[in-house]
Image (cartoon, rainbow, N blue to C red; front, top):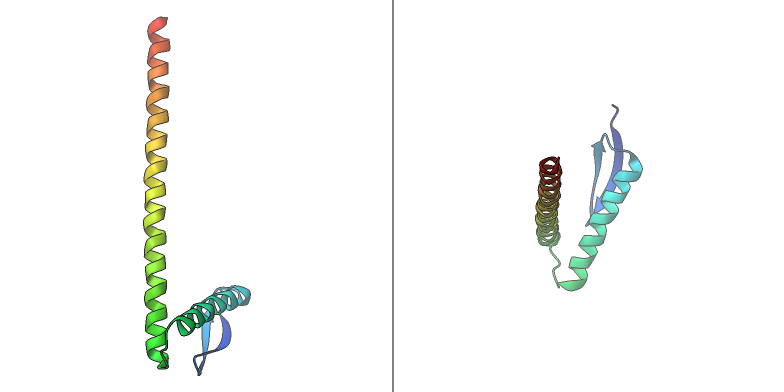
Length: 100
């Protein structure tokens, strides 16, 4: 698969990124990052670009970990529900077989 290149500027630094993802997706990723950086800049009086990026990264990691935790909880809840339904079906089958 060919790599796509995109020239970006973040907090005064310009560079080119390469990815196998399509350019529209890359632009969405960059826009999301720039939006999160803007939130940090609006909420904190930090001028140092490195500190802004570190705080933005910490916020993003926090969000990722919370999403992963929620996903695991949903998966556990789904497994409990599947187990409950399976047990009910087995009970009904055993009851039905016992009646014959």
